Image 1 (cartoon, rainbow over the protein chains, first blue to last red):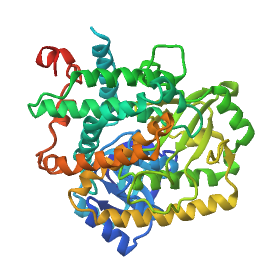
Image 2 (image 1 turned 30 degrees about the vertical axis):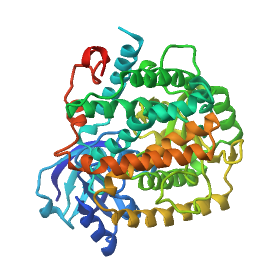
Image 3 (image 1 turned 45 degrees about the vertical axis):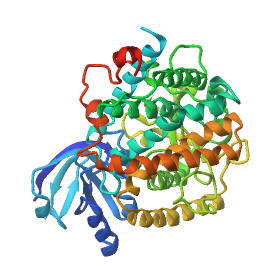
Length: 116
Length: 381
């Protein structure tokens, strides 16, 4: 059973669906926590398409979901280089706090599903 | 319309397109003060381009310097060339937005004239186009024959050379961290015609060892200053923007990649990186990226703005090199840019909610982006 929790535009890795744990990286404190706690296999949500917000943990990412940006955004360029699924202009239909740590799936078409 | 007014209009159209397509109006960062830092960088040009052009003009023509950037691993590249009027004109708009006079109109005319001559020479074509948007979003930067020959000589099937993509991905990550969320000295050029209708594009990474960024390791630990990847793409439409970013249709061009290269031009002619060199590069990039990121976390609020002067200094350095300027010119440039930072950073930091230039640029919809020279002070800005 899955629930649609948002959708956006795929700018990288659109051929496959990926699953991971949802993690919002909204500021530097979120990023520092992710660096220290070392969660794995993440689908991260970022507000702005900045590479510096994902660079320190890119090896632990399964996918990237960004609230803004387009195919020319810095994060989209890097996602393509990394062959990492990435959707931009994603509007979420649930509060971020409800999603933290839950398993989600990023579909090839840019749809985001809650799995548990 | 005078030549300068026409150049101002043409450059304004290109900037408008760039800002719109790249969604820059929404761009923000938790790490860096992006809008204020860009303003600090452009003020360094606004304050010192007159002096910088004096140095260049004393030694070489704009055409010679523009043409010097052509080729593989070339510098100055077109993003740096377009950065000249970008710096001058953004700062001018900010000054006008603050109710000031916007500087010397003769300097604006000088900058636009210099830029147009360098940009035309860099493109290396007979056409009048100066900007990608004036030529079907194309950004040639090397003879097509050179790109084709380099691919033929060094190209390897992408399916058997996954390390190339891994390396360019690591270079992109490192570059964005090193440059504080700017593409900076990473750029693309093309498209060049390949065999059987295929498209060739080139991805370049430059100034990784030798640059003006004080947070980069000294002595340098990245083993190469330049890395260059020629990509052979099948069924891909590649388009280039003002600052040599690339977008493609389909978006995910990597799935259409047939052959690729991993070269360096350090030492002159392009040559392949050995496996050992590539592994060493990856190791150095990972270590430096983490070190720089941790250092950036400790930057105070002023430095999250003023770090831009080092980027703009670094963008200017290849022009001085191409003109044959000595180290004494770079030393003067460092002093001058530091002076701008010290004098302006508090004012820029205090511009709230944001420097007026951004409200002007993002709010100008259908009208001209940059204020015409004739509109300010009866011809005097």
